Length: 130
Image (cartoon, rainbow, N blue to C red; front, side, top):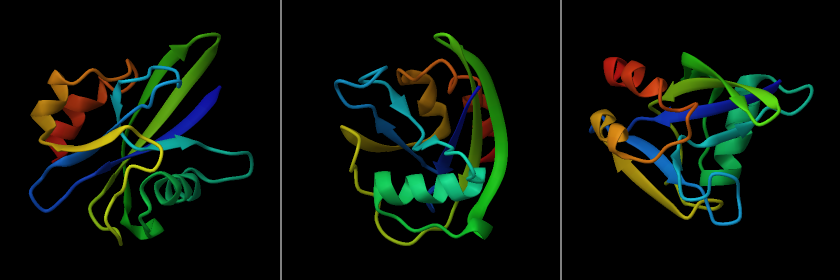
């Protein structure tokens, strides 16, 4: 089981931040919600706070992470469980530290992006939430 956390960062205009996976990584070029793997002994929220600091150079408080939905998918010989949180408040300006690019999009625009299979079922739920 691979436990992964991700954030739908929502700006004041109702747009969501996605990042593009860099060359050399699995699923390179696809757009995804920022986040990453939960390390042993880490809570999902602590992992997401750490990942957002590492990937985007932003600070997020635990209280600003609202559990939204999850996805379950087969990933090679492992099973992926993706926990998605919505976050509307953070400190700093997101910077693409580990991604090729960042893009702010309206929820409906997510349908037109090439995204990992596990992220696709989350789009409709986000559209209803945002």
